[in-house]
Image 1 (cartoon, rainbow, N blue to C red):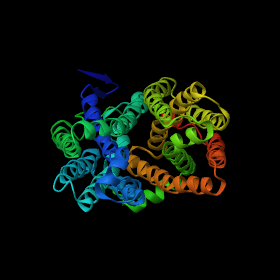
Image 2 (image 1 turned 180 degrees about the horizontal axis):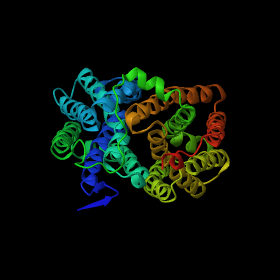
Image 3 (image 1 turned 135 degrees about the vertical axis):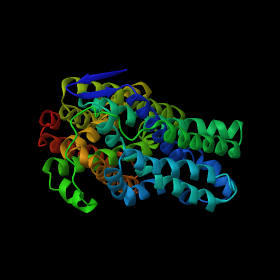
Length: 407
């Protein structure tokens, strides 16, 4: 079945392509956090300090910073299937490589690096997929579902890994995750198609352009540069908050770690719901800017509330609002990037936003910990990220509404 509008066609198969992409995307996040969920076990198994264990996780944002732009260039020149296919291969192959020697820290780290190499090819392909397969009226909704997959992968990686290790063993956990990776390769290359027979929207005139020319082009667009700073703040703040939230709740409000973990999980779950609801509303009213403003404003208020709110119930409600509005800003930003720069630069524009966001994440997390080390409390680190969200609100005010211009 298909819908035809003014010579363009919207195929139902687009949802199959998106679903396969979502599966691969979720796997990258599962592999990113699976060792973080069992860091104490890893320390004991390999007799290594926490500072060494963190490299299993830290390699992902570091490699994302290094390869984000090159991956975006490949996706723009070769198409989403070619680029995401590279990511699917790295993800599945290196997930299985971890089984070569499960007692070797070196093998596991090399495998994590290999999976991390595939991640930017997967994550940067979402907007290229959407502009290739989806009509403009579904753009934010499709990107939102792609972003939702990231959160599902995080939740599975953090929630399922400890249970699998406890009840089935470390090696069995790696085997199950490795099989999931190989399944991802098979599903992607058998089901994902490069493009539909008839495009769902007007196709931009293509011309030969180098990757660096593309970077120069997008960096000349005022609104996109502003959006880059907003992404830098938003992704950096979320990573900092996600890293230290349990300790913040425990130290500031004496909430036990188990209850703090539930609040963290609910924050992510509300973010998943937000990634469905907010993009759908955005597509319906054909506006993006109000939702970025809402994310910055609600985020600032929630961070201030986090400083002063007492008790489990108050912080649970605060976590629901924070997750719903702050996390759902990611698909809105990615959609805006494609609308501002055009479909031809969909890959490289997302790559640029991911580069800035992950660079900020690498910086903000240790900065928050350093400030905490100097003051002995998390009030000043929270004030820092609240101030950054305030700056994000001001930057969003001066951006023009891209959905109206691209209509």
